[in-house]
Length: 327
Image (cartoon, rainbow, N blue to C red; front, top):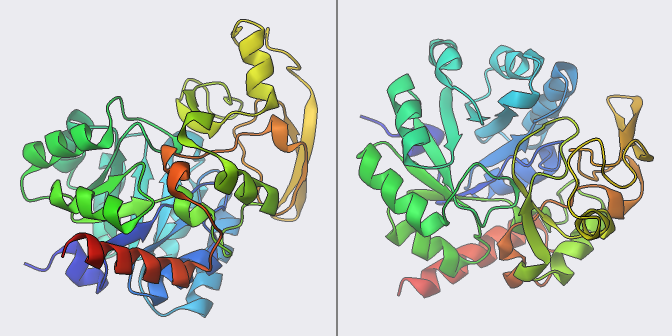
């Protein structure tokens, strides 16, 4: 039976993570796809019409298969409907039950993947009929459902699921990191922070510079940036908003320093949207405001990121490093 990898004609065990808010946009996705990996659009928190535009633009840039990532707690339904209407080859769903979407995806000859936090989560997704799972470790940047490091969650998930493909995510920035994940039973790796620091990602330039300058100890797992998605852990680079909150004794929502302040705006789908302090929204192109007041999502892999490259060159480097690591 053809695997997910066969159906997508993937040449490399490498996906870019579908970093939300449009960080993973059409140019990044197309660049990864053209090199033989799987590009995944970051359509989380985006309205359906904008998702449709992203999909159409990606198809202008590449004829290769690609995916789109839906963050279920932030979805109004129009984003995943846009993916279904466009018959995107693969949809990733995160932080929720995949079961309501499996039959609709398969009826359209689309693949569906669930991003999970560990073996229990992954087992439920497998029972729902997904085609693969992405399993996170706590090293991951962005929103983190995992409660254990990747090596542990990957080993337990592979053992639990048997033959269902497992893709590893969290703390992966080099070919050596990919080699370790593949040796641990993953069939591919989903890489976020390293691709955020690429020319094509839609993160603003100063955000990318913070990624390059940061070390793993500069990141923290927190639930601080919660306006738009409460009670969800995420890993970010410490900034002034985080340190002020920490110095104040880590007060709960409603009593945090500067709560209610407008800290910037972002232009999205032709509209200027006001962003409050503690917003969930990252600084992407169209952002105008205080970089120290928005979440700078980043994984512990920042420790091994020293430059900003074109995505295609980055794929080449990663594969060269992978081949060297498995000799």
